[in-house]
Length: 246
Image (tube, rainbow, N blue to C red; front, top):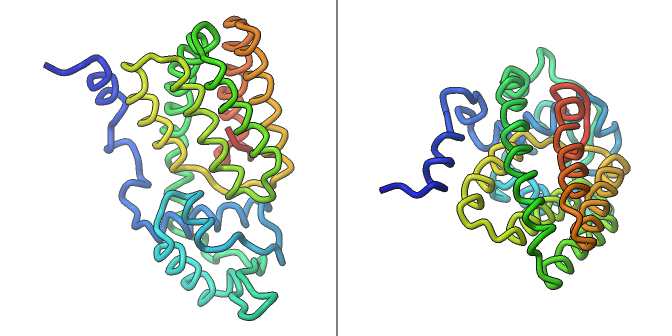
């Protein structure tokens, strides 16, 4: 007999809805970087994080990132430089015609909005319970993630801390049935993450600080209010309608 978590998790998954699941791993990396360049989230001349850092942020292998960047370099979208001051630099050139994989991301807008709503429902329930039962150690873990995200110097480092923060809140709620479906929907939504300027991400991290403060004060109403606002704003700020991180 299936558990409640398994049933809920199955209800969240519908691979027929998503186009990105049909892309190769290297195509998804290229698409996400190309979209960020197209939207001026990554500027001409900007140095990208190291391959390993991009891989960690986008949840792919370092080899996948290397292949994607080599493909982009062949098309003049980035420049790979060697030496002490080397690295991968954005040229500012756009794909012409627009990158096919990037268009798949755009076409998945309805799925992105669905995932945001499902995430809101789960995350509000989780943060409500976290405000009631979170241990001091769990709250300290959340606060540590907020501090680390505030110190992040680029989108790849921030994204890792963003994920760590939200998972820490979920685990602090001690609702075992909700963890599997929550992790599932978060992973699905993070598949649509593209790089954003660190200044915007730091502003999003201010929401994290407010959420931790509400949990520390044992105020579930404020915690839910801050979390709902934080996640629902993605309807307007993800690349399907703007640019920011959740």
